[in-house]
Length: 270
Image (cartoon, rainbow, N blue to C red; front, side, top):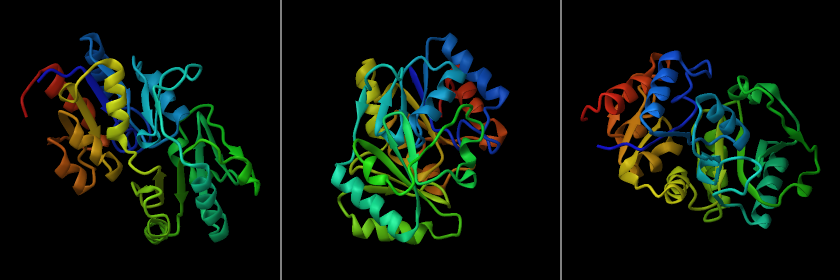
């Protein structure tokens, strides 16, 4: 097994429950880099969050964000890959969110938009310095061009019901990925992390069997199945564990760091 790229999900994978990278995992990543192995982020989060952690670990290649809908290096440069909603669909979905008073946020290029900023809805961003949200009030129709992803959040246990309603109402126009108990990510149809990973591999002239992919949620399944070698954390959903080649310790127990040490640095078989 010759790994040339390590692609990692953020929440529940690279980041522990406190939303930080543990020292052991950070050290393992730096050791992998010293061997000439690329490292990068593959997340459902928006570009600026992915880029923040990519800079922290010293990623040498573009990040995969918005669940594969955007692959980008420097924000000043054109993206490697981007897939946006048809504007008419984005308008309809956001109108449905506003009508039902569902809290929605959406990503356009490197920016994040929402009706207003509710700190309790952005706990996962608390360790991202410089995080900024564009609050647009009721004027959402002015911000529906080139939408890459829409996220609906509900902290009262209604996400599953919202997901099914959206799935039925917009069948064929989007793909819901419910990766937490309080949110569902809505991507353009056919978009997932495997699509973004393939775009990155084409850019780097690498093959899927040269990739180690790491994840924990249902939005990681396609990537875990696509990569030549895949790792699920011990805290991962059962579906992710089944899709992965190996299951490591949890994100709070240096799971990804240990996997890199064992399967990349020590080159042990699985």
